[in-house]
Length: 301
Ligand code: CP
Image (cartoon, protein in one colour):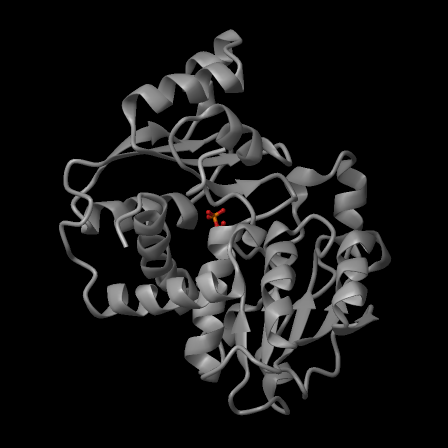
């Protein structure tokens, strides 16, 4: 594996995360540069995306780089049976860096093992979404002034939601307290609770979205329809929680609502005008976090 690849949030130490966040702040202050002149980045999206793909491509364009890639694998030779390995080896011939999203857990790790250029994971199945986590950390630090000692309430699909899995691991460096709010069918998987236990991180689980008065960050998630084997099981839980503006009345003034997006019904649009709604700004922060991640992967910072 190329040592500059970023496929799991655990590839970054605490110090590295903080350094990347500092670089992201510099890119926010001055996003247009020529750092990536003569660099070609391949964005290989085997799954749909709006924010991740477009913010990566914005990040590359603002740094003077060139983008190749696809957003629909059915238009590529993988539809003729070409293996992921062969696709990655081929793209390694053309680009300096690969950004990959894939429906299979572990696909980004596998790609990083067969590529001879760095690979960035833009989401693999229900496993990890580490660049989302870096923009989440950036958003949390920006809104709370710190990453330390925060109460993080995670709501929704904690089973299949890869963003909460990466975020939990990243926040473990900063002494968080977690509340996991999910129905039985979508509870935080045991491996992540075991991880909390081993790290001495406090967490508790609830099944109803009611008392959020202690939250510093309310992290809402979408029920991941695409991961269900049985659509009837999805129908049972798809509208399990909806955050409404009124529910924010007794929350901390500094509390912010985050969501990796897209949302479906889990945040009512009446929340959007509330100053505690941060999810659209969070998505904008993705450009700066990804500028820092790309430059780091290419050894340019
Ligand atoms: N947050 C996120 O990954 O959004 P997209 O699926 O639109 O990229």
